[in-house]
Image 1 (tube, rainbow, N blue to C red):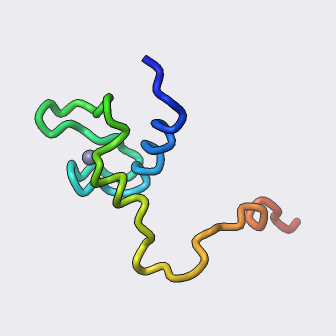
Image 2: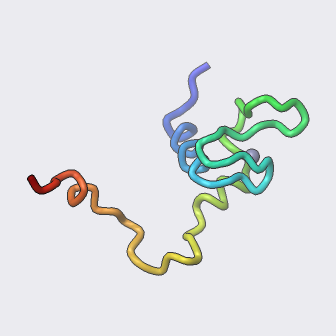
Image 3: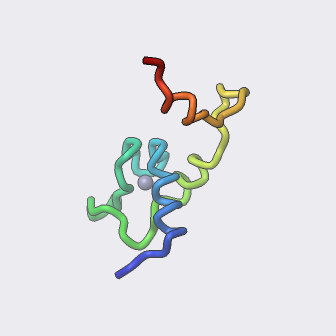
Length: 75
Ligand SMILES: [Zn+2]
């Protein structure tokens, strides 16, 4: 069944970090620790969503990457 765009956005955001709950690495969907199956109801474990939204402690600069600067290569 279809999930909302927000659901997918939350999952994509959560998948950028390691899950503190099921310890799945970035880019990998959370798994139910009892069944071993990827979570389908939740976009990710709640703790992972919170973790993904926290600012990284070591980055106190501007986190925004200028994609235009990378797109235009000299030559
Ligand atoms: Zn998880």
